[in-house]
Length: 368
Ligand code: UD1
Image (cartoon, rainbow, N blue to C red; front, side, top):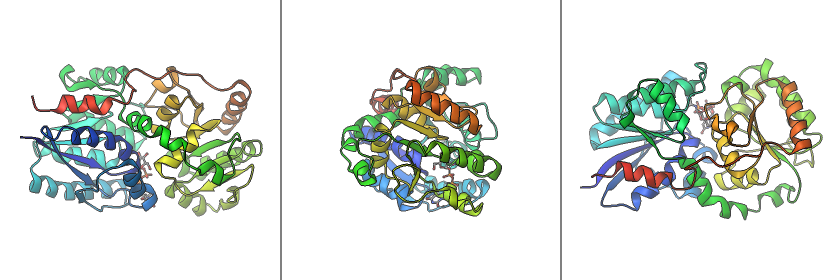
């Protein structure tokens, strides 16, 4: 009998992680009978549906439609709805990815119901309890029975927390599976031409973390510094809905140059996976507070300046192209100038970030 595995996604960064896992399960129909649950944490077409289409994800079997809310509301709504799903479908296992609220909520429900839960991208630690994702990671890993890791350090983190060796499986990076699969098709997108950037140097900016965008005293000087940088090199800024709402709420709209200027900050709507990959792979540099983008730029060989004080993905600094510049706009300005002058960090691709992580996960999960 194939194993009935409920695979849970909720927010944008989950989609590219789950796509290759579902494909690997679909290739083994005798072993797996997956059911895809979308919690609906992200619901905008540009934050969700586009990704399903472009990544070839199957339509979710069940959509919980929880939407936005406070952390407690969002987590609680997923838990209540997901419990019903588990009662109805009685899965052999639940599989969660990443570190968003939906990841933790589904893990709590499954584990409390006695259903084994596997966590993909386990063991990442920023040592920063003010990050909602850090709490989600810690709690999820503490109670999942199988922990799939992207690198050796993640395994060491788990062992230091007392996790038994048999629960830890080093498999590599599923998000990089997706990047490798779509790299060529993304390179053919007409995006740069459409933006007037073909053949030009430009930088890419993403900001969405509460620590960066929720505090005006942090956000305003950062945007002013980015404006100065953008006088020399255009910065393309696909804007997260949360960030747009904050900038407008703080009355800082004038700091965003919304027209497609040759230089300046060029704001766009959130992009689909392929356009965004096309944008980053051709960029001179990426400036971000994202987690996943630190890994993607490492594999693409594009210099990345991360606007955070810490990272749960230190391998992107030690082996990849990532440099932590913290949240000081002056340091950002200096590091950016250095990058332009010297070319930025040159990295190498970490072991097992080779496009085959999802196949390894399927191999571990398959019935024996
Ligand atoms: C969530 C994840 C974060 C991940 C990010 C990627 C948690 C705790 N955080 O943060 O780890 O990096 O997703 O985007 O789970 N909104 C929309 N449309 C949508 C989704 C959100 O307009 O489709 C707006 C809403 O105003 C919402 C806000 O964005 O309140 C924040 O969304 P939410 O899902 O709470 O968290 P993110 O900031 O996206």
